[in-house]
Amino acid sequence: MEGVDTVGEAFDEWDREAKEEYGVLSEIMEGRMGRRCRAKAVDACRNYELANLFPARAVALGAVYVSLEASRLRIEQGVSEWVKDIGSGKVDKEDFEEVVAILRNT
Picture 1 (cartoon, rainbow, N blue to C red):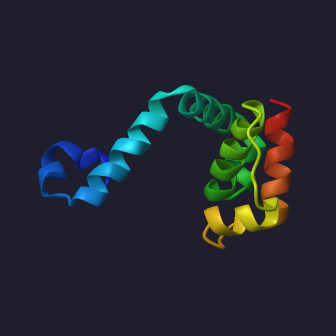
Picture 2: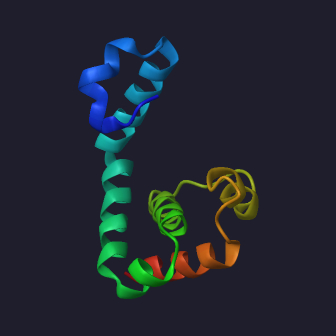
């Protein structure tokens, strides 16, 4: 699947599964959860520590997690497993925990 910036140009060439995935993601991003995640991500960008000292993937994952918490949604699997799965094994759990602690206070 191509990037969102080329959606208009290549959307007709996408297979059915890719179109459905994009549709689901765009609906989520325009909903309450998407707005909440974007607001947390903007807060993170404004925070010197988060913007400069942590990997972007850890900050993004932290923004999603804090947004889920704010919506009172729970992660069924353990947080460590969720971080590993959603972060594709590329997010350090300690970084994630620090990011979440900072985002909870912003």
